[in-house]
Length: 320
Image: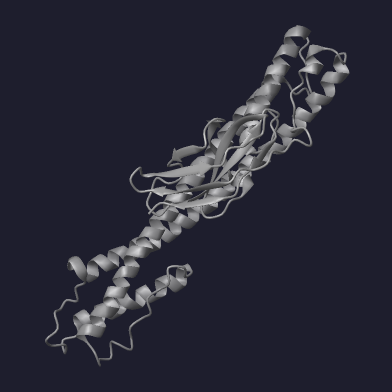
C-alpha cells in the first residue's frame, strides 16, 4: 500500500517491515542496515511511534471537539437567559433607568470578550435591581423562567469563562500533538526511500526481493474519478447517515470514509473512520458526533487496488 494520507503510513511501513524481514532471513548473520546502522528494529520502533502519534492526534481532536461542543451549548443556554433578562426588565420596569442600561444580547458568533462583556454587564445590572429598595410592585428578587435566579446565572457565567479556557487549551494541545506527529513522518519516508534504493543495489533485477519491493507512492496516471457524496444527522437512528454514488472503476478496492473534526476539512487533519466494501454505498456512524453541538466534515474516498485514490465532495454534519 503506497502512502497517500497520514493514515496510510502504518500499513505502508508494515509492508516495508515484512519485506525487510524476508531480506534479513536470506542474509542470515549480516542483516540489512541502512545509513547510520539503522536496523529493521529501529524502523519497527519508528512505525510504533507513528501509530501512537496518529492515535494521540485523534484523541486530542476528539477532546477539542467535545470542549468546543460544551462551550457552544453553554453559550446557547446563557444567551437564552440574556434574552429573558431583557424581556423581564422591559416588561416590569418600563421607563426606568434600567431599560437604557440593558446590555445587548451577545451574538453567538461573537469573539470571547464581546460575548462575555454583555453578560458581565447583565450580572451587574441584575445585582442592582435585586438590591433596589425603591422598586415596588415588582416581584423581587428578579427570577427568570423555571425559577432561575441570580446565583444560578453567576455560576453559569463562571462556568462559561472556564469553558472558554478549556476549549482554547484543548485546541492548542491538539495542534501541538499534530505537529509532534508530523515531525515523525518525514524521517520515515526517507528511510523507505533508502530501502528502495538499496535493495536493487544488493540483489539482481529479477530477484524476488526487487520484484516485490513495496511501493512508496501510487503509480502515475491511475487516479480514479470521485463519487458524489451526501448525508445528514438522523434523529431516530442517532447517527450520521451517509450515501454516495457507486464508483464504476474496474480496479476499485474499497471505499475509505474519513473525517475531520470541526467545520473545515484539511487532508493533513483527516483520519479514517472505516474501510467500506466496494459493494456498499451507504454507511452510518457517530464518529466525532458523540455530543450535542458537535461538528464534523466527512469525505468518502475511492481507493483502487493500486493504492491510487480520490476524495469526494465534503459533507458537514452537526449533531443537534
